Every structure is written in C-alpha cells, then in structure tokens.
Image (cartoon, rainbow over all chains, first blue to last red; front, side, top):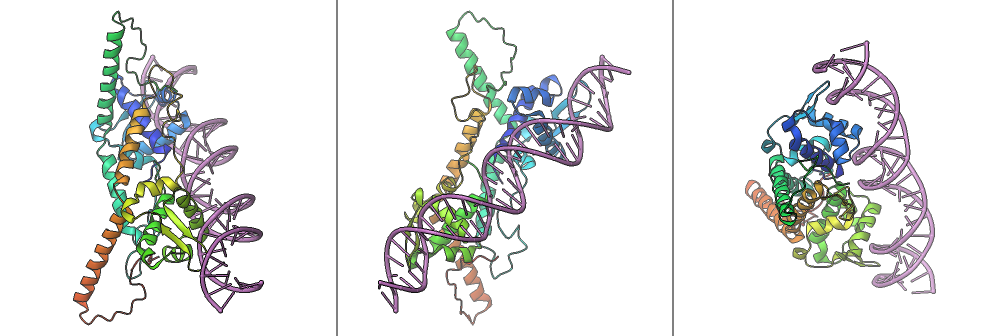
Length: 165
Length: 165
DNA sequence: CTTTTAGTTGACTAAATCAGTAGGTTATTT
DNA sequence: AAATAACCTACTGATTTAGTCAACTAAAAG
C-alpha cells in the first residue's frame, strides 16, 4: 500500500461527495470548485473509483456521482487502493521469483507492514469521517451561537464542506 | 508521512545492517550484494541516514556503517522519514494558508491520518524486526533438523539474511 | 610513503508517477 | 435541438525514483 497525495485527493473528493449526495448526484465540477482539484484530474480519479465500484455515475443534466454503498461501508483503504496503482513492496515482485532457499528477507517484513497499514486504514470509513466532520461543525456553530447570540446567519453553504484554499 | 519503495529499501538495508553489525562495521558493498540494491543508491540513502544520526560511519579498510543506537531504539518511522522527503498532506501547505472561515476540510483528516500511521510505524523498532526474523530463522532450522536428522550444514551465511533475489 | 579500502559528495540520467490540459464522444434531460 | 455532465484518450511539465559516473577524503595495511 502506497501513500501519496493522489490517494488523499481521492479521499477528499469522496468525503465531499458523501457529505452532499443527500441532494442527489454530485457533479465533478462542483467537487472541483469546492475542493480546488482540477476537473480532469477528478475525472481520472473517478474513472478508477467507478471501475472499483465505489461510486456510481448518472449522466446527463442533473447527473453526477453517488456513492455505490452507504458511507459506513466504504473505507479509506479502498479509496486509496482504487486510485494508487499497487506498489510491489518486495523486489521479487510478489511471491513467485524468490526461488532461493528462503524467500527474500523483506518479503514477510513488508507483507506484515502492508497488512498493518491496510488494516488501519480499513478501520476508517467515510461514515466515520462524516460523523467527525459533522461533530466538528456542530461544535463550531454552537460556539458561534454562544459568542454571537443574535445569530445573523445567511450562509449559502450549510454543509460547510467548501475547501478553504 | 509518505510510503514508497524508497523507505522500504532503507528499512531493508537497515535491517541487514542491524543483523550483521555484531562483527563490526558493515559495508554498503555487502548490503548491496545481499539485498540487491545498487551501491550508489545505498550511498544516497545512507547519507541521509547518517545526517539524521541513525547510523555512524567508519572510513577506511575494515570500515562501513554501524547503528548509531541500539536496535530497539530505532523505529521504522524514523528510517522512513529520514529518506522520504516530507509530503504536504494538506494542499494549503501546512497550516498558514487556510484563511477562510474554517480550515480546509481535509486538514484535520490528514493530520489525524498521518498521526495514526506515524504512531504505528513508530511502535515498530529494528530490534523488534530482528527478533521476529531470528525467531523465524529458528523455526526454519528446527524444522530442517527434524526433516533432515543428519544435518549436513556447511552454510557460509549463518545469519541467513542474504536476499533471495 | 604508497596502495588499497571504503565512505562522501555532486552532477547527471532514464523511467515512472503526479497533476493537470485539451479535445473529443456519448448519454440524458429540458 | 440544445444543454448538461459523464466518459475517454492523448498529451504535457514537474517531480520523484532508482541508478550511474567521477572525483574526493580518511584510515589502515604493506
């Protein structure tokens, strides 16, 4: 399992999608605007996410993407694996080539390490991230209500998921 | 924290070093041969490892590298961080640029994820890896002794850390 | 003192990946 | 028919990866 910005972009985009899909399909153009990720790059990422059946697409006007499963059944590990092409941790390239007496020393080492990281990221679902995000939202708005007791709210972005640069 | 083959090479090399340093300094040429990592690439990696004070060098004949600390005090996280240049997880580049109402959505997400992975890899020390490796060695040799009760041993590599391609 | 060993440094390279651009096509709604 | 938005391919510049090459310094052995 490899960890780069690519996977992070994908998780960010999926989180944006998850937070908004209640109102129907979410367009990539919208995600692109809110999260400041280029549209074409998103198209590439969502092509992979769709092929891995993490999202479903709806074409035409009013179309966009929806999650293919409920947020609590989509893990961060799945998202990252979908977009980051695999990394052959062992230089023997998987398992076949180690044909000396014992497998190359790093084999079990990396297999174990990969497992560890993968398990950890598998324990984190989109649903969990949403819950955390909303909890934070709530804390913030409670706080704001306390400080500014009058509450002059005219927010056009009630979900509060617009990226701040 | 980023995870690529570069960090894995470094950990592999450090493990080879740790398993052999009892007999004095270990040369990069030796590690190169055993683990099939190019000498020049190892030189680059060990330059960084030395600057981060994870290893110490001894020049001249009989020289090579030693661990700067005991194996149980060197973590996999340290090794990876030493060779992999850092990855600004949040596209706002750390913490300054998020100057809208709230920080960019991914900020806490990635900060938390980074922390998680880092903590996990910080819990794994070279010493631990050595113990696991030796335990595996022992199981294997016990097994071999059972199967081949005569024991025709003329191994030139008692440590058994030579990479199998 | 010379030679050999082995680390140290810097410049350079081919290949791969990252992030994005451009330009088109298909499907669906209005 | 026009507009929308997914889908697809090819291309690009920048960075990273993994590695080569060459010159240098420090220390030991002869």
